[in-house]
Length: 216
Image (cartoon, rainbow, N blue to C red; front, side, top):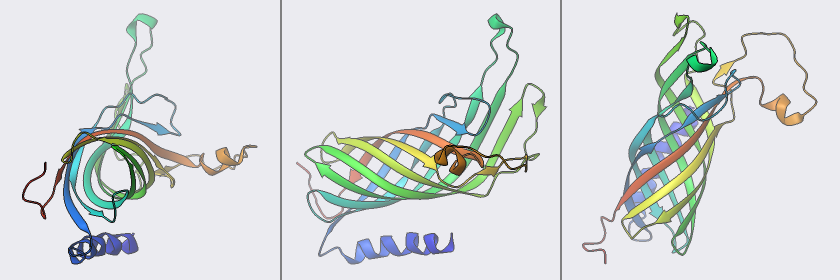
């Protein structure tokens, strides 16, 4: 994590030092983050969260760019009761993260294709079921590491929208049962060691061009 933080601090400095070589922009983003947790007893992106933050974009060419952001994002899972079906089971998990994604973007005409990694720090969380609040009973890891893949559209030189999928590749909470479980599928063996965050990110962004007085 220390290495990633050093990179996070170095990249903005590098971007600004390249002002004469490459264009750089300030990014403001806000949106929603439907989420689920792989490894729990529930499925579906039923937990709706909020996200938003600020970032720096370095434009290397008309098609290639990279950006680093500092984002507040809510993750988790939710399962509501269904009284019509006599289903009284309820579950709610809200995880508040400060996240630092590093993304590389390929631009084709007005379309944006993103790929990158992210490190998130768990600020706090809340967990409850029909039995009551049990926050802290089974602690989560303080850090969440994920891979992000996205598609976006430049609405104009300033405004853009993005849709991304974000998935943890390291457990955010290990399995409470320590017994050995063998899965025939190698993917299942790799990603069934605990909880993993699965997020869909829908964001609206605004690009500020400090080097340009006017954007046509």
